[in-house]
Image (cartoon, rainbow, N blue to C red; front, top):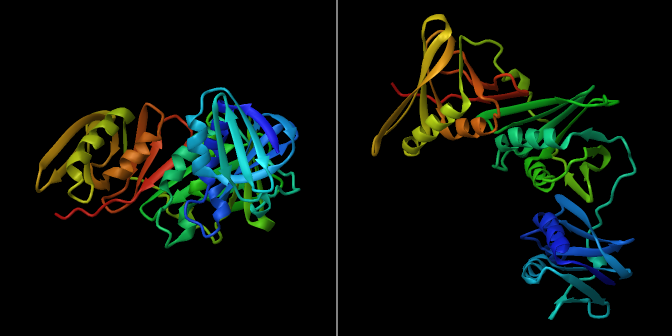
Length: 376
């Protein structure tokens, strides 16, 4: 293999695939990045057997070939090189990759490319096209609510539901639920429901940063994998096996109180309360006080037996009964940070029923938080 490319292109390519490199694996080759020539481009690949990423960068190929080199070493080296052309040549007999850039030269010992697991692309072509901005927003609004605890694997994933011309993402961790839907340009031929690891979607969010063309998604159910195709990048992920809980049953159908308040003001008040709530199981109290003709106020408070307390009062539009309810401050902050409308609607029934958070006048997004018990 003999190939040349620009330092900035190689550095960008390595940063894209680098997060899929296995950090703790019994297979040494999984700690490596595969470099292979592909017509007139250089292909970089990495996998930890759960997620795999391929990335193509422009290059001048003199001689075809492939090798794998340690990811961390390659990353540190390439990032240290000057922003100019890098010439790479593989000494096949010793699997040593020689790199030259200006007056700098290095040799990296690699592992034969044949030992690297292949990331095979299925023949099927029933792909779903998703607008990249919408996809990024959907991941932002849903993936954070997935569980990080591996004791219930299905909850570490995002339920992806395809039906007719609608795509729905849902994630839950037992204390909160996030659901976001969007319309597709073309209806799908057959309904489909799969669970994609939240981490895979967060990686997709990261690498799709400057993508402007629609992202294509292909589910290969027979291989229990999902593929995402971007410009010059492919991401493949294993699907989570199992059945996602029927979250639609959790969504309250009725409410006794609806509070409409400024998203930014509420976020600021809850962040302030969180400073005191940290020592008290993150409990933040919300008191909805209706006024006349829909006006009213919401009182946000937190108390720390050791450090003191905090109270904020906000103007709000409240319809229904007065109510006091407590939530985990962290969960409210997470929800408000992904609501991009000026106002948020909070629908509540009683102190022991879930609270429903929705953006006012923007998008098909719903976030549900289980309340916390307040000792009287």
